[in-house]
Image (cartoon, rainbow, N blue to C red; front, side):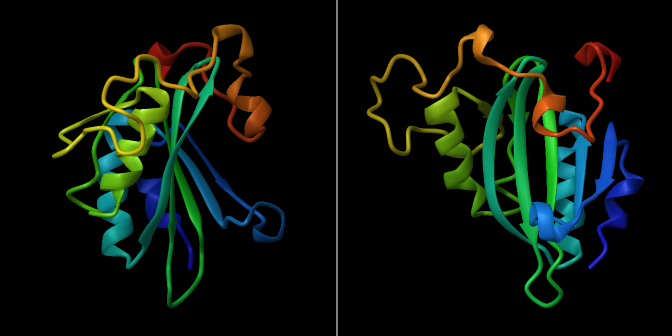
Length: 158
């Protein structure tokens, strides 16, 4: 199944992927304010949410949303990059995102605005520092992980 419907969003970058190499058919890097619209489009096309995860890169916090389709496989990845580690929740669009977003909050301190229940999922409520948070010197550029994503020099350019 083609993911061309995402190309109509104001994407920073899009890339067709080789499923044999990446497990994906399509990837898109979105501004954070387009995450909910991408989720709505995916839902409307019959995709389900597989997972939500975080990767910290030099440019900021990268949240990855993996979607797939049961009838016609075509796994896609919608990514968004934020300098302030906050994104809008998609838990009202995909209820399964509830736990994924809570886990990202637990381990990376990522905030999901509009989440109905952003309480610790796995860590004790008094945990001080998100355990998977990286020091700045340990973060790699986005293009090291995703060579196809030639990221802007700063997020303000995005």
